[in-house]
Length: 320
Image (cartoon, rainbow, N blue to C red; front, side, top):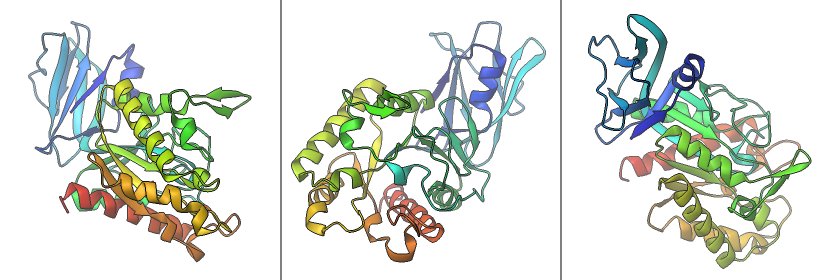
């Protein structure tokens, strides 16, 4: 897939490219596409030949898989931008608190190939991951999931996290709004913006459901709202990434019958075309949960959560 950027200046281009993970194609390589003024050139690695310019004026170069590659933007003999980029697997993370940074302890990436994107630039995928919409500052499962994926797949792994704690699936609809900072925010806008900015992603990792299970949302309503969300995101982003759906309904002290409608919907969704089963995080209980609030995850729970996400993703990518 192509990664497109229209740099307004050298610093913006450098931030967008430095440490970027680009979604790879079936051949294991990624395509880096830049819209550059005619007096600028893109060179990859040590090639003396610039990347070719297409009919639309953009330049496109092949980022070979397997290792960090060097991307350089030049004007004449002057090097304006020098950045390392990596072909790999890229995911947008959305949902409520257990998709964001609400874990009891922060985790840190053990593999430099695991990166996080905040909508503007890239950094190491250390907690708290940037880009979330609730400014949560705790831990997440993504450093562990990323390290496991990078090791198993031998490529870069990118996460663009945009979740928000406590949100109903209703708040993620195009017409939905969630109260924030004295005003309101359309959560779906950030999800769409991440997909557009990345220029390509393997899929959306959806961990949401506790808020709706807590009030007994019926199965058919959750199914309808999710399919509406998926359709709206595809229309607005111009892309149709796969979705992984976690089974996420556990709320301390609630009867299973109250939570059953949303859980049943999540199980059903994972059987539909373009949708896949994420982890069953309802099964991560006891010491795996936060020692104070009981609904988020402890350090051990975050590790188990991350490993479960990686396992679910690998099963699909490997055709299992």
